[in-house]
Picture 1: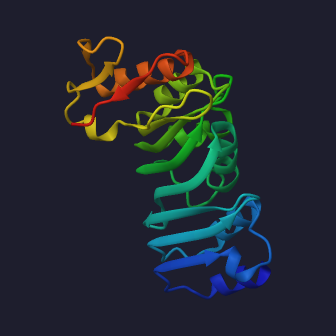
Picture 2: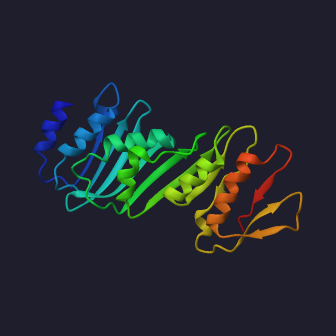
Picture 3: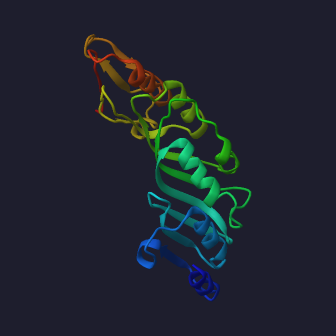
Length: 224
C-alpha cells in the first residue's frame, strides 16, 4: 500500500488512472485503504477507477473537475445500510469531495425490513445535485414503506425487481419518464382495467403490490 501511495505522488501529470487491488494484492482494498488512495492521487486527474474494494469487492469510478469529484459511480450492491456505510467511509471524508457533486450513480439496492436511516450517507446525499439508482430490489421480508422511503430520498430507480415466493418480471421505469401517462399496468383478473399513472406513482404502487400481492394474483408490465 505504501508503495502505491509513493508512486502516486510522482504522477503529477496523470490524467486518467485505474488502480486495481485484484492485480496488485492477494486481497481487496479495505474501504479505509481506498479512501487513502483517493487522497493520494494527483490533482491533475480527470478520471479514476478503483477496483476491488471491500469483502465483496466493488468498484468506484470518479470524474473530476478542478481537482474535485464531479461524478461518482458505485457498483456496490446490497442493502441500503451497507452501501451507505461503504460510501460514508470511502467517499464522504475524501479531500476531493467538494461542496457539490453533480451526479452520484448507484448500481443496486436491496430493500430492508425497516425504513432506512439516511445516517452515514446523509452528508454525501446532501451534496448531490442528482442521484441515479439503477435497480431497486424488493425481496421477501422487504418493507414497502422502506422501498417508498428510498424512492423519496434517492428518486426513481431505473427499474424495480422482486425476488422471493412471489416473483414478477422487472419493471423498467426510466423509459416512461418522458411519457409519464402511458398505460403501464393491467390486472389479468380484470383485463379491462387499464391504469394510466405517472412513473413516480407506478413505482410506489409497484413496491406496494410486490410486498402485498398474494400468490394467486399476478400482473404484467406493459412495454409497448
